[in-house]
Image 1 (cartoon, rainbow, N blue to C red):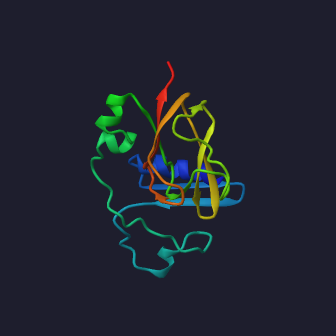
Image 2: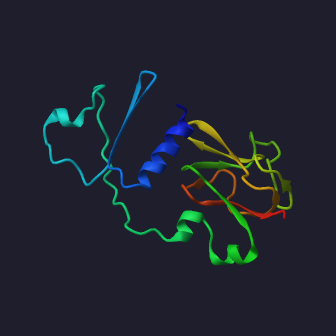
Length: 161
């Protein structure tokens, strides 16, 4: 599994009612557990089967999330008919493949579905963010070098019909 597949898996689990998940794949074991904390205080409870400490999820999980937070859209964007590209991960936004080079896209550029729009660096990995729609870039929400959060707006694209 690559890091994107692991992140996608974690995202799916967080959006479900699953509280514990374990996967073993080609000698690597992934174990996810969430909740309000363990009631077992024994030292061995803090270690998984590989002998590494587990990091419990201590962040509160919201009961309801507004639909606009999930889609990255607000009313202004919906009225303008824009398709919003959001960040799939937390990291640093880069509009170009390297410092000093031309950005992947600029406002006014036509883009095709699958075309790389930017890179989000996370944990020293450069994650290319593709367009999932064909259209025209009409808004850029982030400046290069700035931190982005999961679900944060990156681009507004007016789809071609």
